[in-house]
Length: 257
Ligand SMILES: [Zn+2]
Image 1 (cartoon, helix red, strand yellow):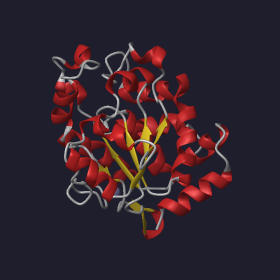
Image 2 (cartoon, protein in one colour):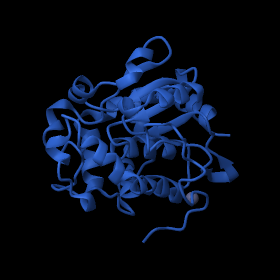
Image 3 (cartoon, protein in one colour):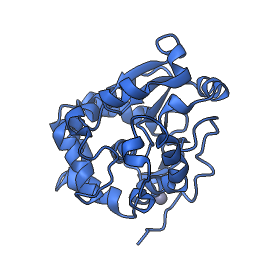
């Protein structure tokens, strides 16, 4: 059952028109407890920037993107790269490599098909197997970024969905909005997977994708967050993994308005 969401109705007010990308959206404008909102123009999420056109690259720079939070494995980064964005790396845009799935596990379930586990359990396992270190690091990357951070994996669906849900939970975003943001990807998933399926890295898994299995399901992202937090909170969990109180305060200051 999809909970009725208090703010996020469709992608329309969140989508950013960046030529070459279809699944890009600003994390801002969703509701936080006590009537506050998540700020716009701080974090955006989407698929791999390797698909950016020249116009798209200009648009991204215009939008103020200064830092790329790349959640892909070393293997994917090596074989797929950054496309046209490569020319701006280090001059305009900084890249932070923050893998959520470890290279050694990449071959097991590279696209999070969830065939072996429920997706919420697969997501949790990625963190247990090493991804958590990247989650802790990326909060400080966001805190120190001079401009907008672009968070991406390959399709901008699972790993990006996992990270977004944690960042939202850390800012006390309403559960219904976390859920809705995760489900918005379903509107773009087929187009994105068709693009990825043509690349050398993903052709093995996406040549004939089971598109139904690729859809994000209601309830699984909040179920994942519940697995992570257990009887505690996302904040306490992140602290137990090494994130400082100071970093959490700085992050909240930056993303909550
Ligand atoms: Zn809501």
